[in-house]
Length: 175
Image (cartoon, rainbow, N blue to C red; front, side, top):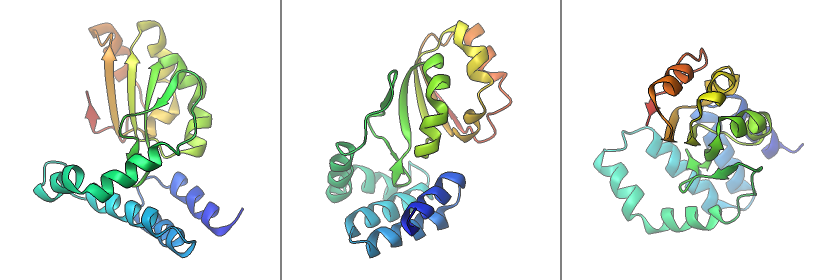
């Protein structure tokens, strides 16, 4: 494992530490990838202001270089296991961190491998099935999720079972 891989591992192990992300960005720049380093730095800076802040809105929707680089790197992301896909906007604070999962069973089945390689903080659960909720609610990886979206099946019993999870210590957005 080289120094850059060790830094990336440290970022995965410390999801809230932006200093490590910025050190990782420095390593990217020193390794000959200044555009990706700038991308990580810009995303870290954006993550520090509310999404409705005028500067954040301007950067997200009018900064062509930021959008172009992110679009290019989306195509370079590796494929994910069956039932899991990259979200439309997969980057969170400069690194791949948003996924769409078919259902709770797919999340639980692939969570160990997914969180071992990526800093996942946003999950869009396409089908929230009552049958999957107890197992999903028990999954400790939910402790890394900041944003959870339920697309289909978010009825009362389903949501109650999910929200009974003791692992939502970082959850700040529920859609």
